[in-house]
Image (tube, rainbow, N blue to C red; front, side):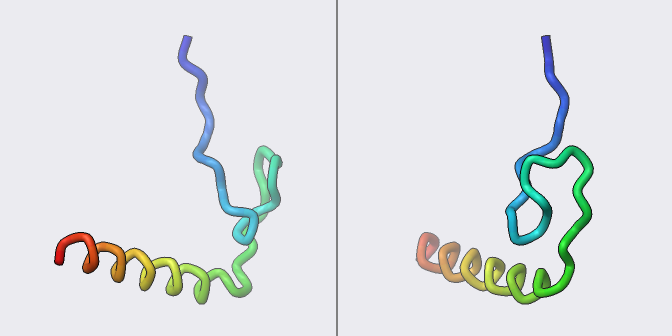
Length: 48
């Protein structure tokens, strides 16, 4: 049997353990930019 659902959401973006939480948009853009920069640096490091 296949269960449906969504991927876990980070607590800085939504309320944890809530089926249909409201999004926390204040400050999310800065956090996403930081995550994107971290991913870019890691990618660069791994690919040389």
